[in-house]
Image (cartoon, rainbow over all chains, first blue to last red; front, side, top):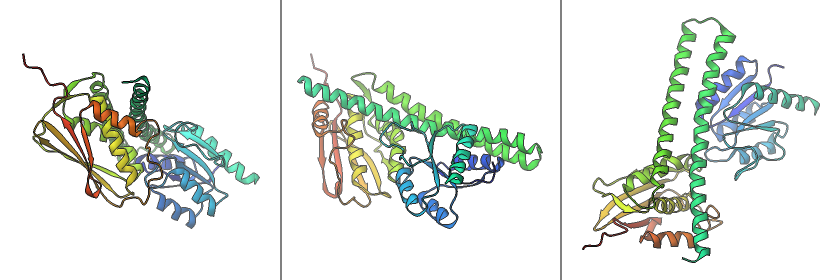
Length: 124
Length: 231
């Protein structure tokens, strides 16, 4: 599967930029933004199909951003990317999120999940 | 100390250590994630492009520099955790308050950044080393800094200043920024910074904590918690 539109939202610039380039090399139409405001602007301007969202970011948590985004772009599939466990801790992944991967990311595992998210959109 | 208070104190200190380790591992995983992605990118460029031209060489060098930088950051972070853990493995020791503040800030910086708060220091050069209980001082400072972080909006700064005073060391936490309108819950970090535990730690350390004007908190710590008896 190729040319799935992916947006990476992560305040770790080097991580997001490297991951973006790796996905581009695998034919995913990928962009990366590094803060909440740019994420909202990018989604409003050109909504991705799949959003890779950091769970913890300055200013607004990934979960708050998820809820905001789902209000104006409900069809986007969101995969949370986190340095913590996906289910434990103070913050829990929302039930409507497509999936969750842990940092450091396994690129093959991630692309499988992105492809499944895309298939989910097609099925809808 | 009765068993209930002792139990609360122990739970609080365990929780505090857990928070410190949790913050450290989260930050370390971020550095490792960058290293893994950057190394993966080099591999991808070799596999997908195979050109090996000048442009690619420059990209490889940039990626290798990024890996080296992340390794340095991870080592520095591990060094702070190492200092922290060795400092608290003795119930009493002689140590620098500056080192304690520096380690605490380094291990809580990520949490502060997520809340949009900048932690800064302004150390007085003539502050003496103190003989005290480092683990409880850490816990007290953690709670007071957390309380301030909770009380101020994103974009705020917390400046931690020190100064010597007779046989004490004074630590002041100066917030600069917009206070949040209401703190929903007075209890920060359930189970760690409950008021009774904080008061207990203040008593054990023979410290004094005052909340002053403009939300400045002043902590006075005796230089020698266990004065040596003269024969």
